[in-house]
Image (cartoon, rainbow, N blue to C red; front, side, top):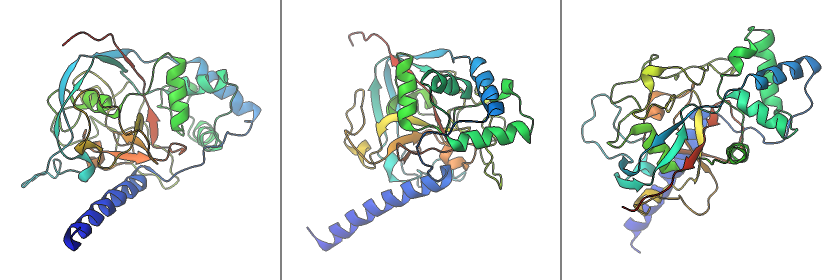
Length: 308
């Protein structure tokens, strides 16, 4: 192995690691995954009320067929929107996916709290603290909170909730097709630069209180298949392990993701993200036991396959 090649390989791995660390910085720092303590009687009443108002998202069918996955290097990019976030979204190529269905909306806070109640689990202390604050200080109603996206949820909890519905987390490729359509939209709504009419992003609060939209809002920012908030609001867990160089060797039909890893893939950007994180090709990852105010999820399920 030549010295030049070794240095090039080392730099590629360093850039991939740096990009992942930057993603963690943008979406939020990790929180512990331990179970929460017993809530106060008053908060428990609100938690029960929020869960009781939960309404599951309708599912949207994504037809079988190819789509454009990933990004590509740009020699000229006046808007700054097309340049890849990092090398992990390269190379761009066409991938075939069998038909599947995916939640139109992010799993709601009401659904998540109902799931925890069914499992006789208390919400994490971080989520309890947030809810108590917005209820008592900002007078946010149970009716509004039940339509917030789920947050402070671990990857395992997301997986288990989907399984309880006889569904699953989407693969990373399924998530990307649902977000961008078959022809590779730059953003879910098209190629125009994001603004507040299409996505909840670029927000910040000194006390880290999430600036969230309800899960069925922002119709102007829907994906080609009619899914809400595939960019912004909360980033979303998917099934795959995060592989920094996976795109270079992935199968061209129904890629399942790497067989192992340290981080699970997270897609879509959040209420806190800048616009580059809203690109449909931008990738990131997080420790599967992380709880964050910037990460939620949605569920998917396979449809019967037909011979092609």
